[in-house]
Image 1 (tube, rainbow, N blue to C red):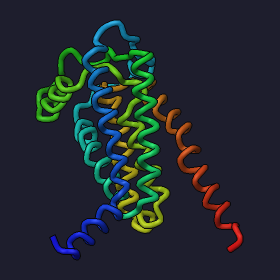
Image 2 (image 1 turned 60 degrees about the vertical axis):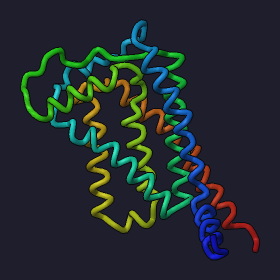
Image 3 (image 1 turned 135 degrees about the horizontal axis):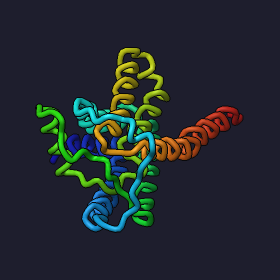
Length: 224
């Protein structure tokens, strides 16, 4: 390996040194899988009276699945283009996901909202069936689908670069709203789960964004 190649490798790792944040997956995934396997009985059933007024609409499976790409694209966009923005959105998501794990560990919860039979039989219903088989109706409070969606939308709203692209901004907000709605129309979550996610986002926001803004303002007024 030439000296030039060595320098390029060193420069690459320095440029993307913030990749260490992804190591959180080695904490989150085993913990979550443990909860999924062990919380199958004796859990608190989450239910809101509003749930009974929300119909099952299988077409919301499309935005529900789009969530995975939405979160991944947004996180990697910040990873490659905005290191400070990446740390903020990663901090926000990690706070929420860790709180979610702790809540589900000490307050086991689940749902009893999924339809026993489907009124229609189509491609979207098939996708819902697949979702129901892959994902247990437990560990739902707060909704990570909703919380992470809010985290990405907040990160986008704080990005000067993205704010200049109105189409991207409008598309992101529209998709975000559809994703949040999909959680209740697919009976994957109760309205209670959505409210809990909103509350958790409200708690995390000041720590990640307001405090950082104050620090930036403070440093900008320091004498040179």
